[in-house]
Amino acid sequence: MTTDARPHADLPADRPGPHSRRLGLVAVVATFGGLLFGYDTGVINGALEPLKRDFGLTSFTEGLVVSVLIFGAAVGALLGGQLADRYGRRHNILLIALVFIVGTLGCVLSPNWVILAVFRFVLGVAVGGASATVPVYLAEISPTERRGGIVGRNEIMIVAGQFAAFAVNAVIYNVWGGNDGIWRAMLVVAVLPAIALFVGMLAMPESPRWLVSQSREDEARDVLRQVRTPERADAEMAEVHRLAEEERVSQTGGRVDLAVRWVRRLIFIGAGLGAFQQFTGINSIMYYGTQLLGSAGFSANAAIVANTLNGLFGLIGICTGVWVINRINRRTMLIGGFVLTTTFHLLIGLSALLLPDGTAKAWFILLFVVLFVFSMQGTLAPLTFVILSEIFPLKIRSLAYGICLFALWMANAVVSLGFPPVVAAAGIAPTFFIFFVLGICAIAFCIKYIPETRGRSLEELEAEFRTYDEVRPVPIDQPVPSA
Image (cartoon, rainbow, N blue to C red; front, side, top):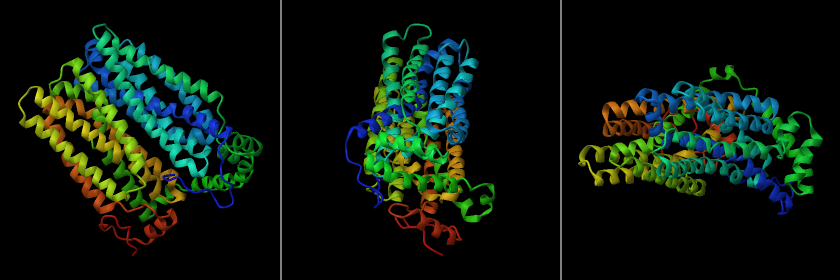
């Protein structure tokens, strides 16, 4: 859900009470999965310098150690939804917590970079599984009118996890940075929220929607009575039955649907949007920001502290984006976001190319990098997933969303693997000029293909896509025209 919808007319209002606190606790515990997602993708940023020193990483092996987590996440995203459908959302989150613990301890105890890469892949599986399971669990256990806000907390926790990783890295490096294996201390911190996630989920209920899909009616009603008023819980059982039936119908979409022209076009649009979001290079900053700032002219200690600004402004950006996302048309916000990020790519490249080495150059690059991160997290980060959730008809939603999410993770992996060797071979300026060119392509793609979805029902969009036979440019802020 992208907005906090009003409850169905037949449902009584969900008044505040003890059940509200229970629902709030469920949301806090489950979003530890998002926190771990953010921490484990961000912690490598500050750990790379001591890792390179201890394991003698080259630019290629450095990129491999970072990007292997993303390949694992692509696998985890594909598996996570299937396991959650088969065994339950809560069961899957418990399993993911255990994988986080095993992966983290394996990384901490790794004797060489090869073993480290293996356990980074394991961590990636957990990250991908969390990305596919936690939002679904939150959506299915939340009342309709609060669903958007509660699900949105997970995205905020992801960025908060990255900021926490940057801050922890800065403290550990500046206090104990001279010690061998200090990167192990940075990584082991993630065990704490992983244990909290596992222990906490033991006391959390299963998704009522999943329980109904398994014909466990009494258990589903008991869960609803934990997180709703009694009268709302009883009335909502019919709604849960309807949603479970929609879920059953949504599983009927399969490979045969890919033969339909308009379906292929939608998947092309979704996969392209996911890939271009990653080709902004946001995760080159999230994973290599400390190294980038060191190359810009900061000392090692100053770079790891300055990098915390990326996490802070990323967190401010995502909170801003969640606040404004339903106040601005999707296309306007999307194209505006790509214009901003592409502009900052150009400014970073020009600063690296034209300014003489020194303090001024380092600070200008930091300024434009921070503004890039804020712009990206405030527009493209939340908006991409909103649009992907809105453009696909129910029948193909699971299939299409999985394909697009896979494309997004693979584009992330390409950027993560390629960034260090490209910077090492060409320097900062040419690297960001490449991002600038990709940004121009992204703007053109959005103008030509992305429809306006704000304020329009999924049924209206599906009807128009079915009759829209030719791919034509769509005017900004206008819906896809009917044939």
